[in-house]
Length: 130
Image (cartoon, rainbow, N blue to C red; front, side):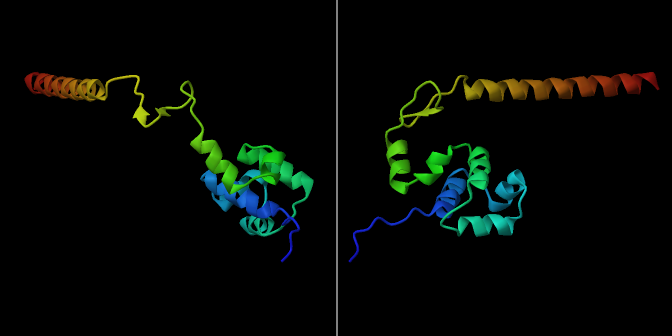
């Protein structure tokens, strides 16, 4: 059994970050000006040339170091310890809504009723004009 460190697989890291971002290979390919097949090939490579890595990192919104040092474990640790009450919409399972959703439904309903009233008034005026 070898105790040597397993080399980092940059392509696999790119693939996982892209998937976590909810991005398809086609979208990444288009953003960096390559074909989907080329992106697939890059994601299958252990090493990626620096110029391409910089472009990919920019599109994925991460640093080159984040791609190089990516690990599933660190992602889960990050999400398990992330509690930012200013920037996150969901905080500890509670939805922080800045308005009452029922008020918005009522407002929409009232606007729809007003539109119908205006339409009826317009049609009545049209009939009286004949």
